[in-house]
Image (tube, rainbow, N blue to C red; front, side, top):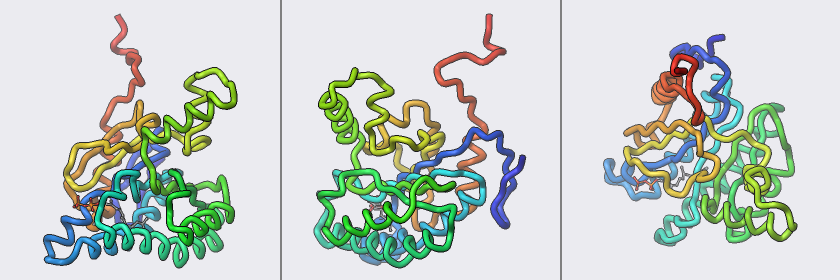
Length: 245
Ligand code: FPP
């Protein structure tokens, strides 16, 4: 089977790339290069999300997880935090709700503690989640999300229920319960860090770090990342047949 977006490189798929997660980094530098405030970079970065989701969907990926705001991002100046929260609200209200109504194959869920979000945004997230669940394509938006925080909460929930502390039980109590673990994690913006993203779920993910700043991320970069993914040998800790003694 070959998969490809319009105008993009055809990529041979063997079915092993189903779930992609992205650390959307570089908005501030994109703005700085243009002598604009950092908030302009976030605005531009918000504006490309639909295009990116559409490209991945066309390529047959059925789960895309986006790191929109971490538990650590509250440390940023208030103007920046407020701008990001407003952009996310606007995106949900103007784009996502319409899309869920029109596209029966699309739904969104949120990873992270909604309680600390501005009330208006929290209510919008709940509205979006309640509109549709478990459709063919799922976008997970990580919002007020931290990987360590997620693991601690999951372990506490397992303990509280008196369940055995097993990998299965922890997985079942993460924000991502029921969605596939990421096969591929992409970080834009040229830094080589994980930044507390999907720490549990990334145990066997392939990482691709690219220099492109998030607002410039598009089809060419996606083709590059997918090609890179398929060039890797995934062994999940085991050996290939040809490695046998
Ligand atoms: C990292 O870039 C980006 C963020 C912390 C926020 C991501 C937010 C968006 C893409 C916009 C809103 C999102 C949605 C879902 C509508 P940075 O600011 O750390 O960039 P820098 O490393 O160049 O400073």
